[in-house]
Image (cartoon, rainbow, N blue to C red):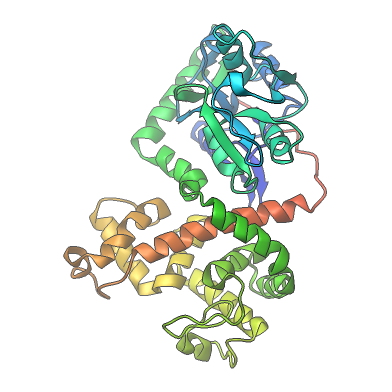
Length: 428
């Protein structure tokens, strides 16, 4: 069982996604069983399902607390978070619980409410509203909309949502770092628990856990409030003039238009008249040579530039080695679009020499900056490159893309989450 949220499980353009989903899918494959997911109506229902032994595993970003350990059996910790008091930047920042001026609302029976009950012993005037209908992400939206003044959120959840809800701020931490772990019912059969332990030991040792965390959080570490605020404004004021062009060309190339639109923003901030000091120009900032190869006659014509840039990205994507899987394949192609395909190949070769995986973006992005160091670039075929630039380029685009998806999806009617379940054979 899991939850529908950006930190756990959600439907992406390429299908199911989210950190908990990735790990659960990997675990099911390890066991040789089929993965299905169950989405409860509320967080309270999720906890009751574990307590009642009606599910086998809750992979739902659950904080491991002393009270929960009395009821549930937890697997190994896979991530640390901090619980934080969140407020709207339009309001005064409270420095302590005694300075709260308004409604504090949290999810019923969540680790946040458990923490508040504990803190109430030393803060007797502390009060809050308990909500059994909404998820933490929805309460963050309510703070952003100034419907309520405060909520509590885990630091990882806030870091993802803060890029979209840009007026959210952390007032202060209310806990020390806490561990997240899968929860299971306490039963006499230890086989599933032992299998979970073995699985997490394996993915910690082989680096797969680190790669999963990077795929989900690596591009949100350097949140830029001012830059994101400007981007959100440009989505409203600039993008509408070009969105249909991005959509039409992406359809031809079988791409997600939001990827190339995010690239266009990174290149020019959607300014069709943009010109760089080095002579690249237009909304997709094509070089003269690239434009000539793509038969783009006027780089300042937005439709021509978007067509050329999209086709060039698709050509680059098609050149990426087939063994590189999505989404790493997307990020590699973006890096090649920026720094050049052969410099990317040089960086992948350096990655091999470092004993890391040249098919993983998390490893290649560490090698790319080494292209600017003589010790390393003299060992490559194509020599020096400003390898730190494609790293920042890709990470920015990943954040822009996430925001575009969030904005685009919010315009669509919400469809019910599938009622699925993680099935683990009882004979395990």
